[in-house]
Length: 340
Ligand code: BTN
Image 1: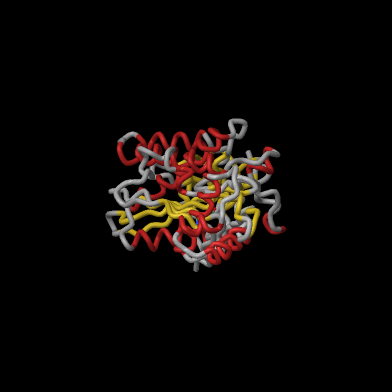
Image 2: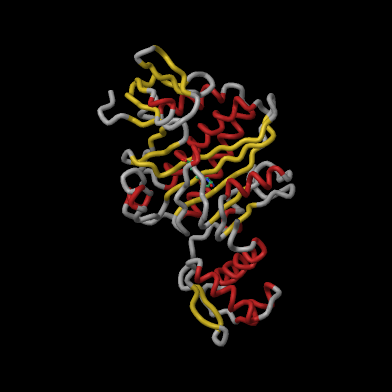
């Protein structure tokens, strides 16, 4: 359940926007109250709430308010211009939904999709209280440091194609990271992880509602560790962030805009061009150190172990085991330390 009510979330966003537009001056509580159509005491309450969410606002009702620093918030207005002309651009009732706190952007997007929200709707959160990962895992979603983003897609394709979208989303993240941080070369791990220095910094959870022959909607949920400087003890050995890898802070807004643009490119290719599927599989193999010729063990499938032999034409992973060639259709691949 979101712990900031959506209507409040919109008002918080408008206050931040107003303070950003007037960054060099102190804005009076009266002016803010008039702009968002509320009372001065309510503005004070909302400002307190913003501070509680980590936005650095100076001042109080008597003096007015000013931002101490321009916050790197994933506000829809910050991305609107870059997204023009993409499936995520604002038109036909489509929206970018922004939440300061929410349970899970994927759960929210699935509910909106079931209610008929259009393709290209985007759901962004500054923090998730119940971020979900694949296989029933949780996704650590600390406030203001990561990107937590879900999008609704409605491809006119059969459900068997969903894996291709998921693989394409991994390629889109890789391209976006390379665009903002060209020194980084993320390694893709089948089906949906992105690694740096062998540790995970991005995961993708694709969920689907489908009939036997036709996808009704897909929700592609992407979590990227951007500016985390540390992780809880249980994740320390397996998780990393762009900041940990580079030693510098990154703009989440810039990375998210690059991500949505590259997701748009990948998606259009899969939907529009007949040769796209083979190209995606080839590019995935080229961008993954583990999809071919590595010793792996599946965490599920009763610990199935063998050497990877690339992807089949649907995107499933081929593994040569002692018993012969097996096709792995889901699960988590553990790359063995002394791999081939
Ligand atoms: C995984 O690697 O297990 C997938 C992690 C997916 C996390 C993202 S964060 C945004 C979206 N909302 C969620 O609850 N999960 C996905």
